[in-house]
Image 1 (cartoon, rainbow, N blue to C red):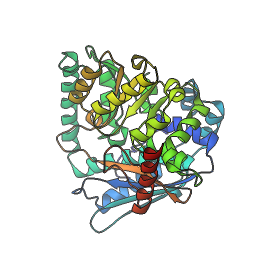
Image 2: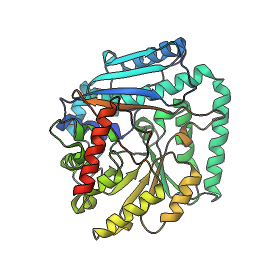
Image 3: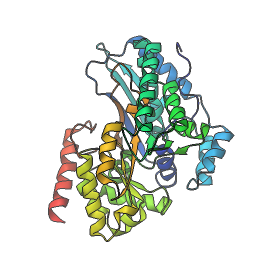
Length: 401
């Protein structure tokens, strides 16, 4: 490796990977998935030197094991079970699950294939590695970190002085962070700062949560709904949310309950998010579409079921900055609990544009899977015919139920 090791602990991932991982271990240990990487920035190229460094960094990541200190920390989280801790004690990433290539135009390709238990855990570290390699090897990193530090202090001042008020918020930026150094700088500074009427409650990065005694934040991602709902070939995929919510409750009961709404559109989600699940889950997460429209829809839904929306959390996490969060909070203040998960804006705001990179599930158990969110352009299915099939299933359900 030309650079220092980027991932230094297997806890260096988002909390929802452990939330989903435990449920996968107990309920879907035989499921197999394929994950595909995509850089959405059209003008970004990865040199051969960068690709070789990415490979070396991923090999180094695959040499890591959980320490007993790390497992003790996870075991203290009230909804994590001893059986899952014992599994993690034996678990190791497999470099053999990765296929990393690039073409003559500098387009980077990464795919992982294997058990869902394994491949799910690779997403966040892989994205963090790609980001850090790109920015360290393509720019003057010292200038970037100086720019990052200056902008971070400006953000803190905005909250301290009351220019923006954003209620409770967490840092969600590991997958698109400038570097491990930058993310830790941001988490440490936000945890120590006077933020006025805003409250920094934690980070999705479990390693940093442990290091700084913060709350590790995260429940489920789109992969859970896609694989649970579409990985079983007997399921009608328009009912993906019902299967996913049912199996989540089987695993966690009333604990660890923030439901993601937009895997196959929020309107379809609400057909399954009826009284039982709306009561059991503490809140819902927004990740696409107009946030005000979505929040109004959720409040109306809760009220239609006789549930007081003031007792539920609306968690917003889609491409946020403090200005957007301030507007959303002011709109819903006093009508529901409002919280924010803010990623790139905290973890990779510098003098150069951030990368827009993703790594998504594209197949499960030999079958295509897809996401149809509340806006176009967020899906990654490689089979357009399957996307059309999924859309027809959703349309039929919405028209006939």
